[in-house]
Length: 279
Image 1: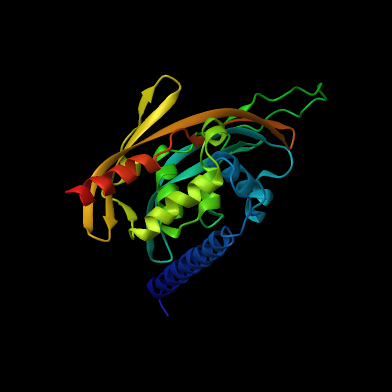
Image 2: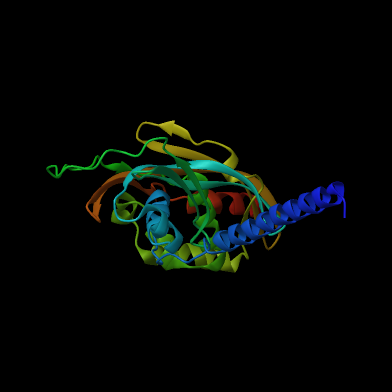
């Protein structure tokens, strides 16, 4: 066997070793990503950012990465573009930004499925110096992102079509509840049932902003109101009041804004129906 044959064999073996290493690395990376999809604790009627933080900090893969010595820098929204198991993901997610001694981690959370869908890690060039005991400082409060008024309108439509008086009544502000009872809500749903009324958005409610009026946001929703004699498009105004609240949890202070409907919107729906019956 000549020198040329020996060199060819050596090069072939080297290429085979490199390809095997790349394949093994890909398998390990896929296994790591699959471990990101773990359920967070169920928690209803809390702010989106607060829930994202809860899901992230309870994820087993996140715990391995950040350990116990970390800081929450922010909870924000960011767009994620990736292909995972042949499926393309292009969506906005809440992102929990966590600082550790060696890295800054961006944890993308799927609120609906209560899972962590991606962890982006940026490693620091130099590790932080050893920490010295220091007096405990109160971390600054986390300000939660208010729920979009379009989401509130979608919930109202859902409960109205389901004839769910209890959930509908809970959506109204304390000012409205002082003058209206749950029995009044049940009467409105009886009116809807008698006329076979159903509501549907005829636009993407999350694609437009509400209009500010003093401390109340007036959200104008274009709806299709179907009833026993036909259907009609109408613009219904939803006054949304955001009530500030403070909550303490896990040594952190959360400042949020609880939304409530601050107007008896059933009256506008009644007017649309009665106008059509008069015609």
